[in-house]
Amino acid sequence: MIKALGAIYFIWGFNWVVMKEANLFFPPIVFVAYRFALGAAILLLVTIWLRLPPPPRKYWKWIILTGILQTAVNNVAAQIGIQSLGAGLVAVLNYSMPVWVAILAHFFLREHLTLRKILGIVISMTGLFILMNINTVGNIAAILLTLAGAVAWAVANIIMRQQNQVMQQSSRCGNKPDCTIIQYTTWQMIAGTILLFIYMGFTDQGIVQWTPLSISILLYNGILASALAFFLWNYILSHMEASKASVAILAVPVVGVICGIIFLEEALTITTTLGMSLILIGITLIVTQKKAA
Image (cartoon, rainbow, N blue to C red; front, side, top):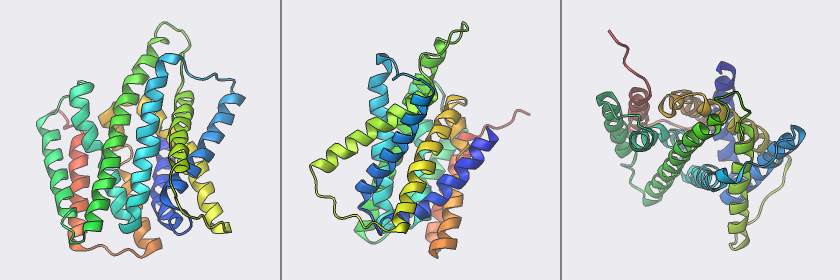
């Protein structure tokens, strides 16, 4: 589990810089579609090599729904948002996901909202309002879009947590699970990718600039940030409570902010620093439990 977390910290943290650079060569939706097409192809080859069939029919509506929410909506929102916002800011906004998970888990997973979680939500929301105190309408729209993507990711995580419980039911008596994490992740990514290509078929997305750097960016995102990292994330989510799993990736936006400063020379204003700090403090309160005396 520790090795999986470490890999996610590095891959997804640095990827905010890579995604920012990707917009120099790819239209946002095209890049997300290509990235996950490559990631899905790799995972599909792995399932074929392991001789894993497609998941049973009962999972498909949830695979399609989570594929749309996590693969398509969340990543398109982040990729578009990063056009006008700093990589570090988008990373923190996207990882407000645990706030929405805590709220949704109260209603759908019976993970009750304690006073500590409520305080964390209030502090995080305060940080979000501070970040939205930006004069230009374009930036406000980008912030709201990125937050919508975070909510979509949270809904997908709730659904995936519920579906993992269904998967485990068949193995409680020593039977082999009828669907594994790699099967679910593979077809989830395929479903989201198909939706993106359908959308691209009806819209004009612009021109791709193919260069050695743009190809390297796509390979990093397809192989590492999509195929490997999403499999690791679903693996972590399947072995931890939804709210606790969220703490496992809190280091990602921190790494994203640091990488943005180092590689993109992004400046941190007092307002932005305060807003991001409040969000991270609030999330920490939400996903950590107070030790008993």
